[in-house]
Amino acid sequence: MIRHAYPEGEARVLSDGLPRGVGGDGDILMRVFGDASADGGEPGEYDPDSCDEVGRKLFLSEVKVEMDRHSKQYERTSEDVTDALVRVVEDVSGNGEALPSDVDWTKCETHVGALVLRGNRCLLARSLQGLWKGMRIPSVVAAEGESDHDAAARAVVEHTGVDADEVRELPLLSTVNVYGPNGRNIVLRLVPVYAVSPPPDGPLENQDMEDNETTYDWYTLANAERRLDEQSIAGLQSISLSLVEAAKVGLL
Image (cartoon, rainbow, N blue to C red):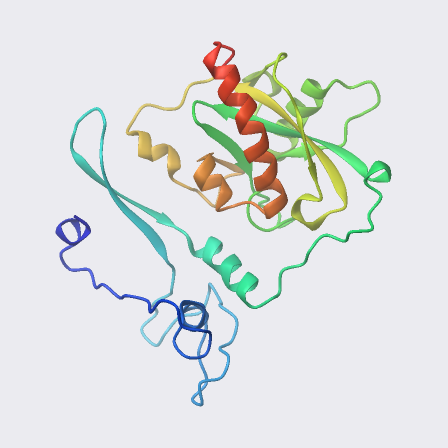
C-alpha cells in the first residue's frame, strides 16, 4: 500500500537484533542524525539547521496510508517525527536525566496545568520566546484563593493567548498529579477543561498539522506522547482512563 501511494519512494530496512557498533538500529539511528567518522566512531550531534552542499536538510517523517472511515478512500498523511527520534537518540546515548529520588515532593512548588480537550485531541503549548524547547502542557502557579479552573484558564491565556472564555469547566472530572515534568522539581496538577469552539472545517487530518510559528497545536494522545517528556506522558495516560469513563456517561 505504501509503495502504491509513493511509487518513487525508496525503502531501507534496518537490521534487527544487532548490537550498537555493528549495524544495529541504534547505531543506524545515530548515524542518521550525525556524520560518522571515517573509522566508524561516534557521529556528531544532529543539527536541524545543517545543510549539504546543495542546500538539503534532513528530517524524518512517519508516513501512513489509511482509509477514511467516511469517504472510504485511502488518504496519505505525513507527520514530522524528527524531534521524537532525536529524543530516542538521546536515550540510546545515555544522556537522559532521571529524576532525583531524594526530592521531598511535599515541599515542591505546585503548578496547575490546563489539559484543554477538543474531541479526541488535547492542546500543547510552545514558547515562541524560547523559554522552553518543544511542547508542554500550559501551567501556572495558582494565586491565593484561585480555583483550579480559574488557574487552568489563566494558564491557557498566558501561554497561548487564547481568551479565558474559550475554555469551559469540567467540574466532575478528576485531576491528576504529575511529578517532575520537564525535569523540573514541581508537582503539576492536571485540570481537564474543554474548548468552547469546535475544530475548523476541513479534513480531520488537518487538525494534526503543526505550525511552529503559533503558540499551540492540537494532538491526539498518541501524537502528544511523541512530543512530551516521560512524566507528562504518564500523567496523560493516567487521566485518560477517567476521561474515557466520563465520556461514557456523557460528561464530555
